[in-house]
Length: 302
Ligand code: CAA
Ligand code: NAD
Image (cartoon, rainbow, N blue to C red; front, top):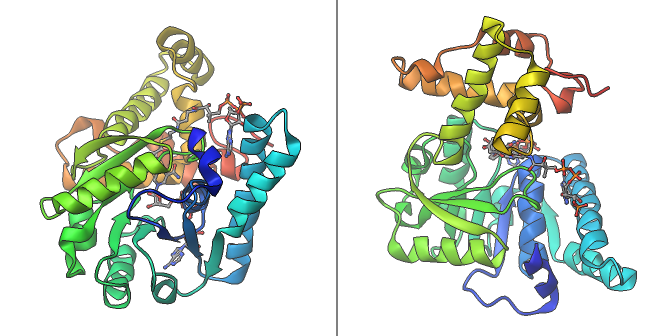
């Protein structure tokens, strides 16, 4: 977040124009931090209403950042918000939106075929030097890139929710990602204020490969009747120092997302007991109790 202060200074690295595809929860956060770091951002959504929604989300989040970072100078805070917003433009056409991008970060729906199609189209439309990156939580970057020519300019940039707050960025190299692309992705991550770690293109990278089985194990504890969600959450917060317990975090991430990740890994690795389907999770998803965003999950948010 400190990087946000450099909002008026010129961007030092080679990436100055960023196109973010998908303005949902993650994409709006990614657009926000890139713009706050002084970059020109094009945010692509499927229609104007969703673009408008993304803009409002970014505006609200920037106001929270400004309130904290400029607490003694409201005018400077307002200026920061206005200047950052002015660097973000919208588009409903991904190919047009990426026509002058140095970097494209994709944060659309977690679906392999849809991501592959998007990048195959962008590969034809974007300049030759443009680096492509996916923010996928659980899919293979190599597979997403498989229909592109520029496999050397393709990698993973995996952010965490809420993007403006969480300090980590996982930078993923496939076997084809060039040294130059990797170096530029790492530099860009630092420019947008994140601490970068590197991981191979393995399922879940570092964080989700450890986090998702932990959420699943917590649900198994509940299914066995070992302890209540409230007690398991309290235990992990006070006994392990986690900011949220596993049930709070599962509600925060969304049960559809966790189920999608687990089901995908179970299909690929059926012998791994950590990825076995969970009756409780399947039931919550079937009932639409997806967590915070639905107003109900393990807890009620109404
Ligand atoms: N934009 C800007 N600022 C925000 C924000 C947002 N969207 N959300 C929170 N903040 C800021 C607040 O302004 C607040 O700042 P101050 O403390 O200076 O006032 C600070 O962040 C803390 O927020 P809150 O007081 O509202 O709440 P909190 O202290 O409970 O923290 C939390 C909220 C940061 C989410 C914290 O509970 C946390 O770290 N939880 C764990 C989150 C996590 O594990 N995320 C990863 C999920 S997995 C994932 O993302 C990967 C995947 O692929 C699925
Ligand atoms: P989301 O549903 O909030 O947002 C996705 C957005 O993409 C939607 O607004 C949708 O309209 C838009 N979209 C879909 N297809 C599009 C297209 N072809 N062109 C332009 N926009 C399109 O989802 P999200 O939670 O932001 O997740 C996005 C990606 O980030 C997924 O791959 C997810 O796995 C990954 N991710 C999610 C989290 C998380 O905690 N939610 C964390 C890290 C990574």
